[in-house]
Length: 183
Image 1 (cartoon, rainbow, N blue to C red):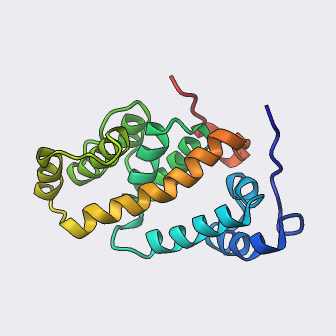
Image 2 (image 1 turned 120 degrees about the vertical axis):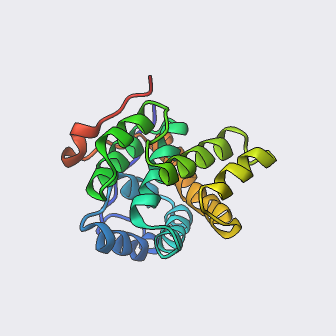
């Protein structure tokens, strides 16, 4: 398998460096996935713009982490599952809910369950929701704008999940306890 470099600010293409700086500011370090993505300035800049919009949107950070973890599991991206499991716990998601998502289930908390179910359904059906799918999400207390916003989160996940599966970066040691291998 091809080995993709994990770039730092010093080794990344010049057109990728601003995006890496922004991600470093957000996380306090450059995640390995971002270092790998920065091989393509187009891809890392797309991710950085989506990242900023998603994290500046109307969902809370715990809700975003439920979505990102669900997407990572649904797309079977091992790096992203480990990383977002850690971030979900750090953002107050119950360990039992994180475990449920990691095992293909739904969180017990109703709004988190609605978010997770919608994200998984969107990915699995390639966006072809039924009226029942939409109705269940709306009945959980969300509106149409939030349904569309979930698509933005899925788009950001598609970048990291697909690129993570292609580049296969190592999970950083602080997240080792959350390592995941597709069952």
